[in-house]
Image (tube, rainbow, N blue to C red; front, side, top):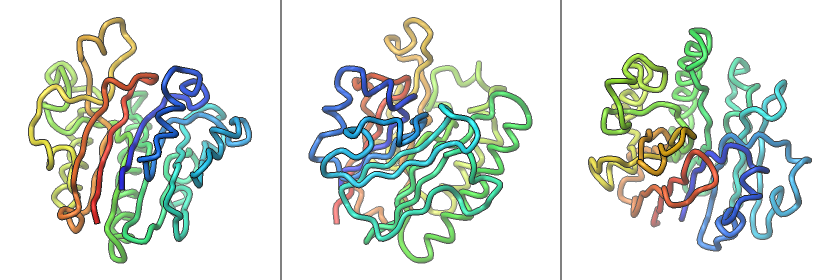
Length: 256
């Protein structure tokens, strides 16, 4: 299985940029999880809404059009699909798609950004808790593969300026503690498990002039898999050379 996750920062916008359609139509991709799609399915062209060979799922913010949104393109037919977390408090912003597959649960998630104010930070932390509880429930039946924009860099190695961002949302101790908790509970950061502490490995760069070229970035996009799948991990990688968004795709290969 070749899996990808990509915060596209606007699906309709990135579809107009060179290379995206070729990326989407790569026959090797089994599942592609997208975040920040910011588009209703009815506003997508047919080749984006349902490309040949894929089954597609989309969920969007109930109130704010053009905000957040998650999509999944899958060549493996799911047993069932769940849109959003079951907790109604966290089920209105277009942030999660869960597919039950034959061998695992696949989740594409776009976590809230806590940067705006304390209210949003608390919402982000609450979302983390609800997501963790949901995964723990699902894990009783099948292993977990969770991917997406977690909006948090885990360790100092995961961003260019950890000292300068110590008080900023995205690198606060309380946010990083959630990832610590995931790992302590048996969820593996696939990229680090397979590649070790490779420095300067980032998945997001500010649009400020030169940041991406100089690789001033953050690694905030992940694949976490429950440890039952460790024997199945083959490859995990980042694709900073693939442009079109302020994030790059992250990939995972599982062998069964």
